[in-house]
Image 1: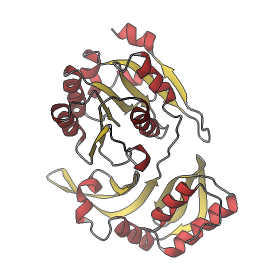
Image 2: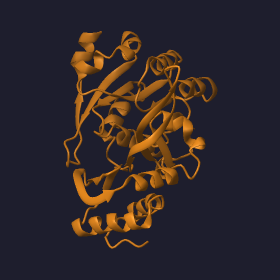
Image 3: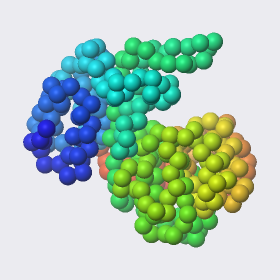
Length: 306
């Protein structure tokens, strides 16, 4: 359908693609909200059964008057799975469905377990669709640190959820391809980093691989100078980073932490800290509604850690 609002052509294309998974009546209602309020960007669409539709628009929280029924949630869920829940079973267990084009749908429902092991999800109750952003200056600060070190320093980027780590990483991937001749690999486990603008001939992409396994494969098989990955979340991934670093690879990674003190207290990262892999710890903060990124560089605390 045509949109009655002046979007950039790329955003209009992304929304048209995303709305192809929605019932047409819901698409029309959301479009009415966008037109009425003249929103320039949709960051998230949050769908919860027997509740009102919630948007993150222009980085602001917006509760609409659009009621979402249980039947609508089920219809959208099946559409996101393209009619086959089985095909997406592995990622559903991890809490999401990849829609391509960097778009990810978070899934929430009732766990199905066998012998205390999660084997599936039923009765999906909430869906959160995150629409990726491309901000061509987002990684300027991090890229300047790489240049300063002659591309030899590993960098760990940390922030609370939703502050823009993945957006920074996405732009950094693009800058490495456009401005350097470095060989690099991107571990895109959730298929949300390498959208069309970031693909280039310098980049080896590991899409939907388990993160730790992909880091080891890239190190052994593709001889990258730099490996980039998002959201270190367990000891297996931390150990894979440790092995890659021992092979001489520069690592650019992200993780969740609200402060430097919280970061260095994370037990899953202990092996990384002990090995002194990262030269720079870059904290990212961005207030709701603000486009500006605020960075902190903890060099003094880092040196105290040594």
